[in-house]
Length: 366
Image 1: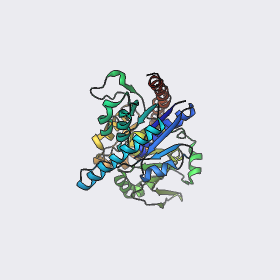
Image 2: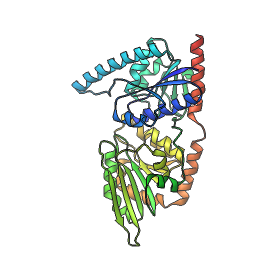
Image 3: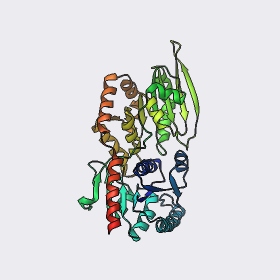
Image 4: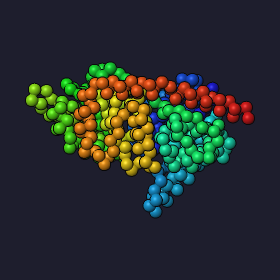
């Protein structure tokens, strides 16, 4: 049995795959310690995993504003010292970083202490932390077809996004019953994540009545920053009722995704991976201000695989028509689900575990 240290906090897109890998390593008989941040998104998600070992680290995102930059430097120094103490105490077989500000201090500390560094990049354009740390890594996991310059071929493995084991397709009626959703027609799920929710929330408000006339109800995850909650009804001429449900946060993505006929969302790598696992067709609106424009790259690759339809935010006024045309097109929805099943043939967690065990064995014998 080996101990693996996983740095994965700061955003849901980093934390969720870290949890998925930790679960797999635990089932394989290994010990795992996950490093997370003090942000609310981490606190909400980890409450669902009381059996995992989480350690909270200092750290904050980069800012070029003078006070923000000073705070970033101070927090990163504290995170580095925290990582040094933790690594010396736990003596891991390898350190895995999923990117973001928390991975920097942990990877630097581990490298200086002589431990193998493994990185995972979920997006089709690597983030700043992964690019900066790539020279320290013994292994880097990248999406299929993605490359990083100046890396020796033996360093790179191409793999997908680790999805938590509880994310799986449920029968639609079961999922709706679990959520307490009462709809008679189609159900559209809409969410924009932590940064991109505002424009999609406004789109829901502006277009609910139009969609309701088509007997399309909406389940909208508004985001913690917006925080709106409640339900709005629209009475149809035939006596049926279309509803718009607003929730700021949901940690029951299996039920929410399985309940929906169609999803409108941003193009985070984690969201796309969960759409694939739950076989839910989608229309993706890439967040235009994402770092390195990675969401556009994610979205267009996914569209090329037949898993989604992409609508740019500049064309969001066409989104309602696209939703209506898609959600009632049974042939297209079936075709998209078939493509999603094809994309879900390989479990990234299994491949990563075998590779990490090999890296751990090499480190132990060195």
